[in-house]
Image (cartoon, rainbow, N blue to C red; front, top):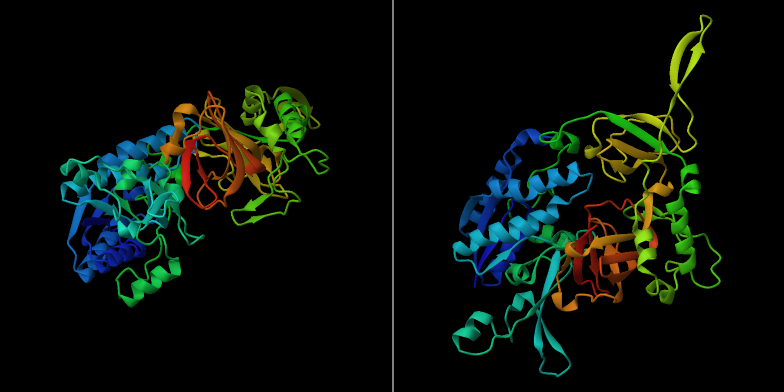
Length: 493
């Protein structure tokens, strides 16, 4: 079998190529250039040229053919333009997810197949299994085939058709990598069964430390190369500077929202009442409306991680679900001016009238350059705790901020995914309207998996978390996993 390895110049793809060659596959490497503009990156040089040089040295060391392909036009059209459009709408896209769906396992895959490849392999930390839909020899259900034994015991469709037999169509599973600190399955959450059928992830069963060790033992040129950071194939960038290539700056107001706002806001108080109605009988703790999140690997302990009565959750009306999933609207916070006389000459001046719900805390260069949960780049001082973005309004060109990790505007319990934005990696496990399931969910890369109840309704999917989540933003990908680590589906919030 002929395998094309997407060789990036990093240690992960290098070891992937090494392992495949050791396993006896016919391997060749292809380096893809997806970005030209070095001015957008923080370092300002052509990082891809260095990566290409290292990748070529790795291929030479492994004695495998090396090819170069320029996919920058497709990348700009299908990833970067999407990113610009999403930010312009006040949403938070994930370009790495789109890069995998649209480039690595689409445009790159097509190019590899034109060169005779049967499969494409990458250095992602995730695992792939193949399920044969026919009962296994033991008669205890589908047979699982590790990806290293491709098509073992399974009738490959092209060969089955050639023999005039009915093809057995396998089911492909994608699971978390065994290294919890490096799992990259989240970035593959939009892949289809067709794409998975032609994908291999040779290092998904290894720890990063093992990958480094294998690379050093094989004396690979990439053994000590640092992991890449920033946007896929673009590099580490200053996001506002990057976005200003297409989105214009426009000065607007930064509004700091006070806690008083939530006490008088009808939507927020209605959400509190709905959450109260879902709590277990006899619940004596606080109503869970504020996230215990501190960082991706830290949170304050909670007495009961699952405070809701399951029967009450599944019995919720569509109206209650929609209310619970609705983001708070801050546009009602308006400011009026008043005149006053100042100094011994009683000079007439103008100032903002005090508002119990908030204050104009500063200025910004464009609401489209900010995302919910952001802390850096606000330039607002005079506070004991950090200031975070809690909402953006690109039409009014306003951003709303709150002080501290426990600010009410940072936390939400429920999110909604439109029906046309749902993607099932396992179409055979798609939820029917009216169905409810328990899954583990993450809304961003590296976030620990969160327990949640998924409720499928006519207008899409609702995800109710056991505990409030920090920084839920439209445009993010929510991804749900089975208890064994299999990624089942995803959708755009």
